[in-house]
Picture 1 (cartoon, rainbow, N blue to C red):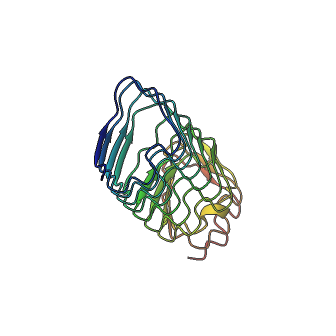
Picture 2 (cartoon, rainbow, N blue to C red):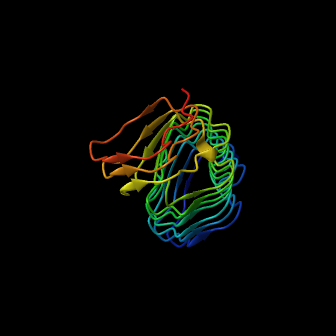
Picture 3 (cartoon, one colour):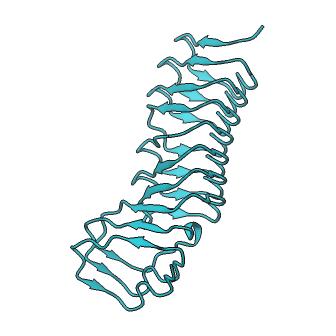
Length: 232
């Protein structure tokens, strides 16, 4: 028996860990508003699953839930989750775009690792931390929008993201102090917010790959060594 389509009845409130793991022929699944919890690895290895909608009723999505769903190219999370757990989408090599819910505060380790088709990611202002290897080996990722000043980016968060060149800073701050770009040092293009009035000493120093940065007309002062070592 090759399970291809599932309509979960409205009597179900939780989908337990690995409930549908390894259902290789599963193409479509409908989750009702009655579901609150999706357990770890619930759909892991469902290599034929191409689309998914997580309803607003879901408050928790476990780790590795969609790991290895290699055909998954579109997923909509309508719920107000605050954590994307470890390995949730790891190995989703067909996932082209993903809208992170604006309620999310933490992206755990390897959450999007090896999403090799993912091209752009917008990190919401609510984000507190992005853990190690969260976007590891996202080789097509070329643009990230985020508030780099209020989000902790852990070591190797964007490791092997060789196409990542553009950073759009979404913060509404007025002054840019020294920024730690260690985890995204390959950046060559930076877009600053129009709220900036000053760039402090050594703010962008050492960004050897930086080739372009916009300077809004709102800027009134640029500090000493602000762009020293920007050799490109």
